[in-house]
Amino acid sequence: MALFLQKIEQCGDNAEVDKTLTVMYRPPEKHKRKDMRMPLVPSIVGLEQVDVELHQSPTKAYNMGEPYNSWFSSCFGWEVMLVYLGPHLRPVLGNLSPNAVGNRALDSKSWFSGVTQALPNLLAPKAKDEEGLTFTDVAPYLIVTEESLKNVSDRLPDGMEMDMTKFRPNIVLSGASSAYEEDFWAGLKITSKNYAGERQSLDLILTQNCARCRSINVDYTTGKPGAREDGKILKMMSKDRRVDPGTKYSPIFGRYAFLKPDAHTERNISIGDEAFVSETNRERTIFGQFPEGFARE
Image (cartoon, rainbow, N blue to C red):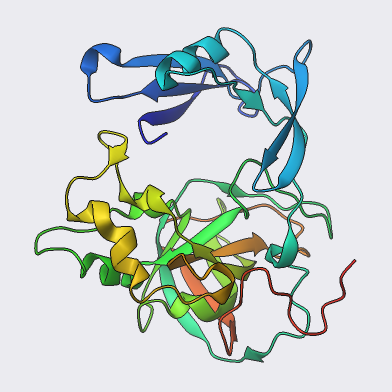
């Protein structure tokens, strides 16, 4: 998957609908490189509906069919299917849900930061109390800090730095007082300006820490495990970052987040926006363990 790149382009007058998605396959062998173009919002008329399960979270999706399935199958070397989520959502499971906070203990500790990197993504809320995921991992947002990345890079030989994109965050902050401070964050407020220059803010609820797998060892130029020292980074991090008993064999880097359920308006965030940690936990959350007093339904 590391060998696929994407770009979105406007192809008509309707900014909401007339967009295309170009997927670019970029293996090391230049003669194998190729592109596939498709509508960003395809019509679902006539498409077969299929069942999809990702991380035990099921949903319905649409089989995009040909020529897409054959194109992706030729890239992977085995038969695969491209599916489109459409209007469906996946359920948020276990204590990842922002409604599973129960009687968690919070401190009033605060912290300011700048948003140094962020995907140009519109933070659009859902209906009140509705929770759901697209084809993201287990949460819509993953928050990390540059201070934690530096701690990872410090494990590598001089002159080598860890590539942040291997951790796949969509919000990167700078200015933490120490590495991995985000392990304890429970609430985050990001303040920015809208297109009219008016200040606006949005609130995020941070629910669980992100356990890491062998994907962070992959060399993004080859799509294979890295041959250099950064190809051993999972083992290096496992020495001191296996800090979540709920995923005790995996090192932790980053924290999952959700838009606060009572947010009713759309917001944009940009590089340079200010972030404020509004709530912290006294102890690290434990993946899969509900806070005491949480009402299971």
